[in-house]
Length: 178
Ligand SMILES: CC(C)(COP(=O)(O)OP(=O)(O)OC[C@H]1O[C@@H](n2cnc3c(N)ncnc32)[C@H](O)[C@@H]1OP(=O)(O)O)[C@@H](O)C(=O)NCCC(=O)NCCS
Image (cartoon, rainbow, N blue to C red):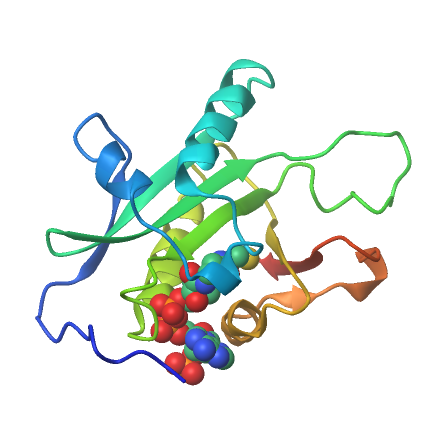
């Protein structure tokens, strides 16, 4: 059942705001429902993961707060060029390298079911299509197979599931041609 109680009918457009000293605490304090906690890392953990990826792996990370007007409603984090080059082509990971990856995505439990997730994904894909870390043919993401809400949203935006790269206990990968 969708939550319509926090529907915000204001004309203010949804927007992505870079994580900064001004907004990181507000975004850190956004949370999903208890039963959704296995679907995405907490935002605080995601900030730490972004730091390690940038400093240790030297890869670009693009973390954004999702805002409806002045109200923080969610978080999305994109990175580029995930995966090891194991020398085999195509390998199970061929699509990871040289592609954009939507690494983290959540809408706070108070604001789900209002269309914000769909709008935020469209904005994120617009951003990716500016190729901020370099040219790419694909954008991919992955989700727990039981995460029906996320699955439906991604497939409706053109992502295609790749069950041949799915292994028991892992997340289902889905790829969008940019
Ligand atoms: C997945 C998530 C980001 C969707 O955000 P949202 O703002 O609630 O989604 P929207 O209201 O924009 O709905 C977009 C689409 O998602 C799907 N969807 C959303 N809620 C759903 C639900 N409860 N059941 C089934 N499908 C649902 C529908 O396809 C919907 O499209 P429609 O409105 O045309 O039917 C949000 O549910 C969330 O944060 N979940 C927990 C964290 C998570 O799973 N992140 C993704 C990790 S891969």
